[in-house]
Image (cartoon, rainbow, N blue to C red):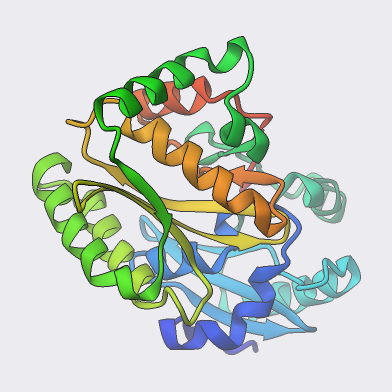
Length: 297
């Protein structure tokens, strides 16, 4: 039987190679996502056939992520999947595979045929963008974003954007406390968990090669963004700003994309909308090139 161990932040540096070159561009297969949500999901991990298998629990239901090969070795993934199948039989656990990328859907459906049920909730699909769209805001499709950035710069001509460093962590944590007090929904369990996860992300900022940006006005932090690079994709895990500064969100998204384009990144994954109507509308207004499926089987 496979041995699953609790996924702890201190385990992630050793497991980092599994995440750093994953080809699916899904947020679920990034080290930053695991830092933020592994405690909430009681995530555990096992290694088989050179692949990483994650087991998590949402709403009392156990799910296994599709085996993750650092080199996208499909044969190794299938061998690892066979180990997982045997494990579930021996443990008496239903085999529920979650966050299956579209690139592996045919493989899985052919493997199980009629013996499966499949869902693909719109709530959890990631939004994928060209980084050049955010970095340039070119054309009629982005006229609204350009107008917001222009207004922000007129109102706050001395505002400065810069990439985050380890030395900025205390100031960013202080900003998040202010943000939470002003703008988080009161008594929101998920918002509280997200804040805790953001602090864990900052604690691992340097050791796990996170990237981030800060927007300051008059020496005060008014917006932050944090993510990590996985293959050719920048995955944004945290983007928070004080909305009293009109246009601040399009501005920090624009500045961060400009800065990160020089790091060999072609795409931005801005994660899912969690079913929030306002957030969905905002993400669609930035013209995603793809909404990434995540199948559960």
